Structure formats: structure tokens, C-alpha cells
Image (cartoon, rainbow, N blue to C red; front, side, top):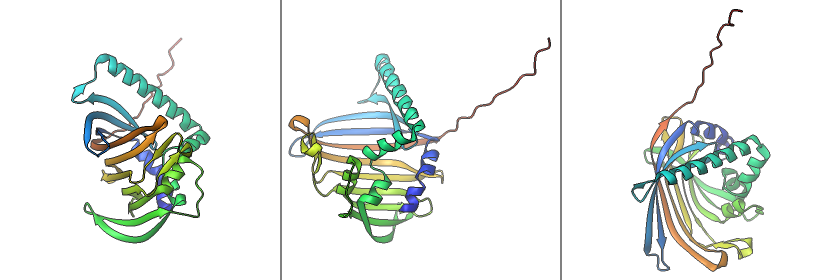
Length: 249
């Protein structure tokens, strides 16, 4: 797992050379778990380091209007500019990672890994670990608290030193702001599946999330979200400069 962590910067750099499509389906559920509303989005996806840039191009089978597309382009431009600025500021970049998105580093510190074994999944030989909270670890950030609340299994590609699959759920309620801001309920779950693209890097193919939570002002949240990634394309941006000979006087 420490080798996987050490390899992440390399993985992030390779990932930046790829783009794909993402079909996202959001299902709002009632208190009985029945679907009451379904919304489908189609995104064009690119990557900046570990960050995913999602450009919305379609909603419920309809392309965006010119006005909607303009707003989306402006949103993406602001997001990219912000990420570029954070990337230049290493301290700010690390602080943001520590406080928000769960990283492999969070898992390494917040969870204990046990029952290592070899398993074959999707025609790949992988190393599997079960994981659960490390009671000796004192979480400081929201990401660390979330990682510590998760229980499940992770599958690793030994040769590529990357995550191939993760299946996890919250073993207990996760309270945000002491429970005053929000509470993520026990049973909320995530499934994350990647595929090995062009014999280079593992990239997402399927993500499913089930969220049961109580948000600010006691608003209940109960929904499913699935993302299916497809049509990966590799691209490289190069530039060439030509210096002309000096002009004759």
C-alpha cells in the first residue's frame, strides 16, 4: 500500500493525457427507497492531476442551449484556473487534499489492512485487502474521519502499483460539525472500478454511490448516483517554435 501511495504522482501525470465520456445517472429516493426522480447527465471528462474536470454537454437526452453552454464554459474556465493556481502552491494543494477528498494516504493512516490475498477479477490477477477503522488513529480532517468510518475491500494491481477496485460502506454515522451541519448515515456506500488503459494506467470505468444523510436544517438526503466512463482517448499537447534568421538591414 505504501508503494501504491508513492506511485500516485506518476499515475496522476499519465492520467492527464486522457479524456473520456461520463454518463451520470442520479436517482432521488423516497424514505422507503423507491425512486421518485431520475436525471441523466453526459459529461466530457479530462484530468488535472488527481482532479476530474467534468464539462456538461447533455441533460436528459437534450444538448445544452447556447446560453447554458456559455455558462458551462465559464464554470470550467474558473475551475481550471483555480486548480492551476493551487497546483503552483504546493502547500495549498496539500491542505485542500487533506481536508476534502479521501486519498490513499488517508486510508493508510486511518484504516488497518488485513487478510491479504490474491484474487482474479475481470481477467486480472490482483492483491486484495480488507480494511476497517484503525482505532489508534486520531482523525483531524473530514477526509480522515470519512476514511476511518469506511469498511470494505480494496484490490491492487501489483505491477502497476495502482487501485483497480474498491468496495466500501460506512460502518457508523459520520457527523459533520458535531452533527449540526450534516450527518452521513451508516450504510452509505461507494463502489469504484477502474480498467487498465493502453497498458499504461488504471482509469475509472464505473463509480456508484449511495448516500443517506441529513443535511443542514434537517433536510433529508437519500439518493443513488452512478457514473459510467467510456471512450477513453489519449492525447498529447506539444508546441514547436521556429526562430527566423535576422532580417537584413
